[in-house]
Length: 277
Image (cartoon, rainbow, N blue to C red; front, top):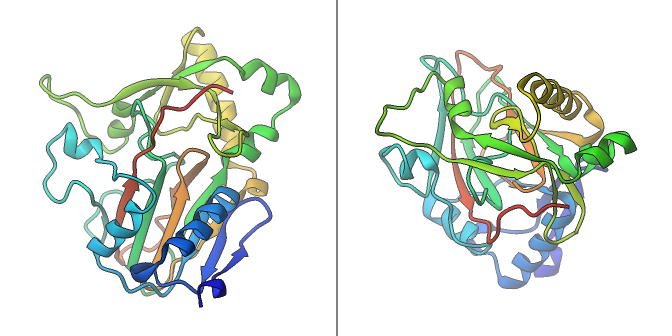
């Protein structure tokens, strides 16, 4: 029965587990319920989902066209451009997404949503993903700082993220860089969003370098260290997690070395660039 779908909040601020739906066979009425819950909870966790990569892409397309990661569009990476593989094992020097970030915020139009599927998590446990609600993070600032940030803009530079993985571009290569409002407006709820992150945001426009670095460091610390607007997702086999990339940040916890974790991500394009609050 379609009305058996249930949403069980993980925290009062962010996240819900979803039961009673098979993502490989989801109906339009179920998608409508999921879309409504997605707007409310921002992170949805679907467990015990035996889905192929093509079924994962088909489910994601019910929320919009798929996004192509700039590693494919700009750097010519091999493989299916609609799938972003995140494989970490004993030979890995790093894992993707260890620092807090929103996916590809350096794009002129950052993605709407990301859907990560882990078929088999590390056998000894670990590999959790942390999420943070950027609407709540904004509300957690003092009224003076909230007022001051309105109208400010910041640069998001993909080269900053690449440098964290020791990737250097050749003179012939380019990578996205964009300017977005520091405080954006959620297109559905109308709520203000604190839209800066430590992985991509390189500077606040109009401030000196020292001023910009200090403000960004303060904001990122504010985002990262307050559990009040965070949740932690523990992966079990065949789990898919879907998050609203417009108003959340996340980070991977690499605490399972030398064990492996293999995951695939599908990302949904957004129909419009972030708008100022």
